[in-house]
Image (cartoon, rainbow, N blue to C red; front, side, top):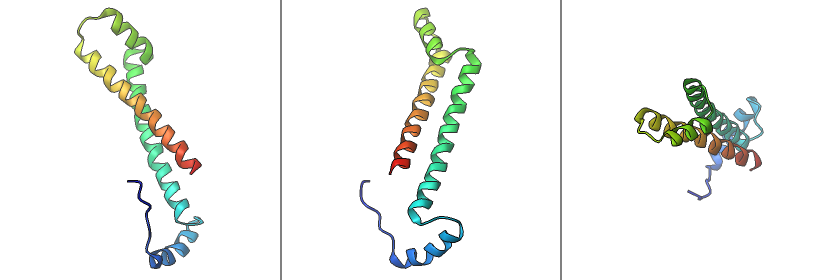
Length: 105
């Protein structure tokens, strides 16, 4: 999906004054602003999920994970939680990086 997007010149001509009324300098600023808001929403979602697990176990992911490895017994709920917790942490970090890339573009 690395194809460059093109917009119809007539659309740009119609949209530009409206964008200006809303304080945007152009389409790029609007898209950047909206994507940033969407990404921040994803980050907040995954951070919230991470905090839920920190609260549930009253420990950090690293400590909980290390203790689970030391115990070594099969605890399916804990294993599932650790997988979901890891996914939430990794996803939040991925979206933070995407936001940084977008802001540099």
